[in-house]
Structures are given as C-alpha cells and as structure tokens.
Length: 458
Ligand code: PMP
Image (tube, rainbow, N blue to C red):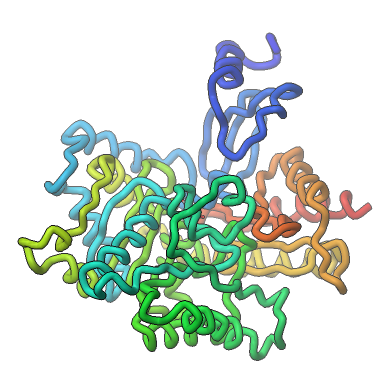
C-alpha cells in the first residue's frame, strides 16, 4: 500500500483496517481491498484517500447532508455555542434548544413541543415509550400496542427493530418485546388490487389488523410518510386520508417517522405535509442538522404533552425519560443554522424544481432500459425498482443490482440501494442528492446511470 496514497494517509488506512468496525459492512471484503476513507467534502463532492473525486447522489450515504458538505456557517455556529456552553443535561434548558424548538414548531402547525435526543432510533423509542406511559396513565394499561408497516424501518435499537418491516434488519436479533404489530405495506407497483382502489384497500388492511387486535389495545401507528430504505414507496391515492380516518375512529395516535423526509427532502418541510396528515408525533433526525451534529427530536401536540403534566404527586405523571446527549447544545446550534440555510437559500423551491427535472430524466431512463420497472419518489427522494422481467416484475438479481451501484461508483457517482425488505426485494436504487443540487449534477447522475444500466443489460 505504501506509495499508493499521499503521505500520512497510509497509517490511517491501516488504523482503520485494524481497529474500526464499519457499519453495515462485511469486513471480509477488506482482505482484498483497502477501506475507503473520505477525507473531504464540499457541496455535493467528496474526496477519498486516493484523491478520487465523487459526486454524492445520496447525501452522505443515508439521506442526511441536505444542505451539502463544508458549510462554514454551521461549523462557526457550533463552535461559538460550544465555547459559550457545550452541555448541561437533565431538567434545565439552553439557548439554542429553546430557539430551535420555536423555529422548528413554526414549520409544524398543530405540533408545539420538542423532545431532544440523538438518533432517529432514539426519537422513535421516545414515541413508543410515550404511548406506553399514556396507556398506563390514561387507559388503564390498555392501548399500549404500536402498529408498524411491512417494509418500513424505524431504527436499530431492539425496541425500534420490534417495529421493523425489513426482514434483513431484524432477522438475527430476536426475540423482540411484545406489543408491536405489523400491517401490510402500500406499494402500488406490486399491488394485489386495481390501482384505482389500491389506496383504499391498503388502508382498510390496517383497519382489519386493528379489529383483529382489538381497538382498545392499540395506542399508535408508526409510519414513514414515504418508505425510504424499504423501497422508496410513495403512498397511493387516497391512502393517507383513509388511514387518518381509521386512526381517528379508533382513537389511535399517528406517529410519522420523518427521519428521512424531514427538513425538506420532499420539497415540503416535512413529508407528511404532502398528504394533509395531522400527526400526533413527528420524529426527525438525519436532515435536522444535515449531519453537522448528532441531533434528533420528537415533536408532539400540546394535547399529548398535557397528558404528562397533571398529578404532580403521581410517579407516572411526567415523562420518565432522559437522553444524556439530548443536553448537548451543539446539536440545536447546528440545526438552527441548517434551517436558516434551507430558508434563506430557498432550498425547498430548489428541491421541487430539481426534483421535477430528476423525475423527468429518470422516466426517460425507464423508457430506455427494460431493467427499470418503476420510478417513484417525491422532491429529491427517488427510487428505481430494477426487474429481470417487466411483465412478471421479477426483481433483478441482487448481484446485478450491486453491479449497477458499483458501476456508478467506478464512474465517480455514489448512489444507494434499498435494504432487503422482503426476501428477494433488494432491488431498488436510491437517489437523494443534496437540496442544493443543480441541473449539471442531475445530468451527471442520470447520464452515469444510463451508461451503467446499458452496460449491465448488455
Ligand atoms: N427511521 C428511518 C425512516 C430511517 O431511515 C432511519 C435510519 N436509516 C431511522 C429511523 C434510524 O435512525 P438512526 O440511524 O439515526 O437511529
């Protein structure tokens, strides 16, 4: 390896190989190759240890760096805040936490309270725990179950995995806690029913589960507004309207997992705002501070908040929960500046405009390549489902999907692909460029895909 990389980096690469356990990675691969280490990022561009340049079409690999890399103003905001006060946990507040909660809730009419945490998984756990505490305190121990959807993902902790609809993520980690109940997904491309009635039927399937479990046992339903890692699944016509009606009918709280869609990804501040949903809980993480700090939060209504306020003498009255690093001030300081950037640079407008262009180009790829079975998404959040046969919709074999991702990578464009939500369904490519993307980067992404798809098909 000596001489392959610039001075000083070889030792780092060896330190990584010897000591770092990478996420979602089979380390046997490093027997024959070096780990990749990114050294620098600017805008949408990344540079690795070999000096290779990449266009990042997935915002940090996992839909996160919404405002792009190298934002000096965020780094400065965090630095200034850390020097003033870096941390105090427990029951005291701090300046950026208060200011960000106010700014964030301006974007979520009806939701007024922010509970800070560190990761998407943790924010979702908070909601699950709130549901259970509400059940204990207000429903005589009933209404404690959480419904979740096949193909959705809500995090990596055992509780969040109990609410996971992606088999490859939970298969090895059971047994899981009780009270998490799966409902069917709503993917139109593989619908059992006519497209016209699919939204209604997919929502009715949720009602069937509620009736089977007993409505008085179900406290909440946790759903991604657009399923991300499970296949970039946009909801069918009429789906959300009906889901909402069903939830209100049975007094079930609506928990929207905005970990991916939150902070502009779909061209609205939050994904749920595309569908007229009135949630009781919203959880967000990734785009909240675009990866400049580890911060997540749960946003909820005054009505939910009030359920934890009464009876000061009752030990179940307040929310008995803390995240040590929910007291870090760097997170909300970064998030405040991130939000200002999205607003001042009109990045929601850019997301809508560039998203429309990206969708148009992806449709052209679908017209040209039989391998592209379906294109779906919203804003700057797209999935291309790859199939071996358009008629039967047989998923493209995983090694070929991997070859498309690797082919783009070899041409300097980083794209993603979905997790194996259901056995055999690891066949959707993911594109989610930063909200700052322009036409030239869109062209580079889609031209690269065009070349690689052509090569794989051949
Ligand atoms: N919810 C969704 C929809 C996600 O995509 C993810 C992460 N990919 C999570 C929750 C978990 O977030 P984290 O990894 O920050 O715990």
